Each structure stands twice: as C-alpha cells, then as structure tokens.
Image (tube, rainbow, N blue to C red):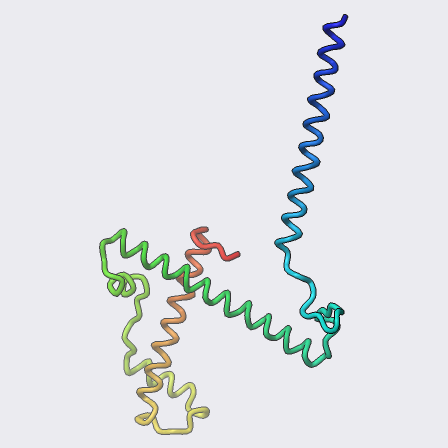
Length: 167
C-alpha cells in the first residue's frame, strides 16, 4: 500500500512539473510573439499614439495608397526573384550560360511585317501617324508584349507546379 501511495505522489509531482513547464513555455511563446508584432500605431504625438484612423482623411488615403503600391512592388520583386532562381537552375541543369538559358526558356519570335501591319491597322485611329514613322516603335511594343507574355507563362507554370510560392 505504501508503494502505491509513493508511486502516486511521484506521479502527481511529475504531472505538476509538466503542467508548470507547459504554462511557462506558453507564456514565453506569447511574449516572443507579442514582441515580433509591429506597433499598431504609426506615430506618437505629444505622448499620444496615433494610428491610421487618427490621421486626416487625405493623409490616410495617401498612406493606404503607398501600402497598396508597396504590396504590388513587393510582389513584382518576388516574382522576378522566382524567375531568376528558375533561370539559374535551368542554366545549371543544362550546362548553359544564363543568356542561352534565357533564350530557351523565354522564346520570343521575330515580329513579321504582316504582324506589324496588322497591329498598325488595328490601332491606326489612336496612332495618327504614318506607318513608316511608327514601325520601329510598334515593333518594340510587340516584342515587349511577347516578353511579358513569356514571363507570365513561366510564372504561371512555376506557381501551378508548386515550385514557386509567394508568401
């Protein structure tokens, strides 16, 4: 009987030690999480914390626009980083230079005269200049459009396959 009571008291002591450890680790984790979170206030004026809701409407709108612009720019930079990683990996796997890998991954066909003429004809009202004056600019625009399409296609493939995840 004494052995059972001794085992029980050891069990109770271990249980309380374990519970105390869990509570302590939870409190430490909460403290670390709170210290990593950004301040909810944008500024402090004469000892009073001010958030975005305290700003004048025009300044709050400007700040929100900046945040939106920041998110767009951040997304573009992260997409570019993902594409560069893909390019570097492809070049290394196929033992190519970066230029050669880029040419294989992002194939851009030469713009034909027929495509130029068609693009000019479809936008002739907007251009309001003769064909021979805008031919070079139009060619560059079509090449840039192909490059954007190739970039978007490569990004979609990487994201669809799960090789690129933007947080």
